[in-house]
Length: 181
Image (tube, rainbow, N blue to C red; front, side, top):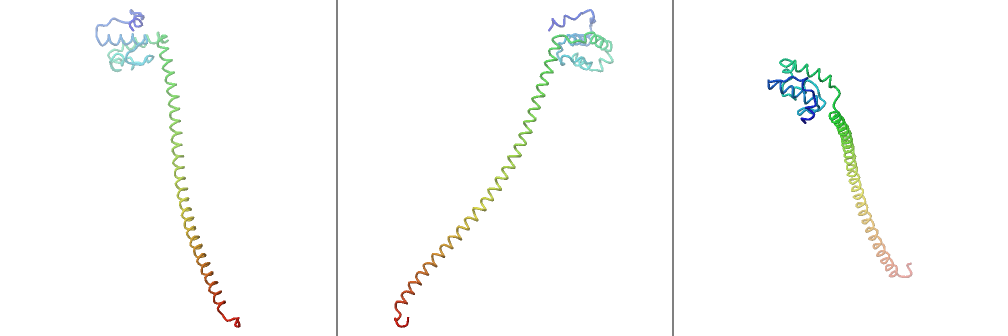
């Protein structure tokens, strides 16, 4: 890290004895070199400088306006990001695009899952309705079978009664005197 920071021309940055001003100058050096330690590389705003230096934005605008102005001037001079910073920025954008694509796929999968869940619930309700209908039909068939069995039993009883009556009639006919026939 120090190799990249040391590549900047030191005469441009003042030598500060105050620890706060020294922190701001060091933060300027790191940010322009593309190696900030507290902010995202490529973020060269005054707010990012304040964060990197560990001071407030108000400190940069009021107490250290000269260093803020120096940062703005140097930023314009070094506006083109160094290759490392450019690579990090490009990689960051690529990762964001991949994340967004994955998020879209995830959202689509959740939506599809919700639709399948609704379809499954509707199908389950339809199956329940059909099961109730089937149970009703089976009950009706059972009742019809019982009625049919009762009717068949009645028919059998009537046949037996008819046969008994025919036998009794034959016996009575057989016992009658022949002349009365």
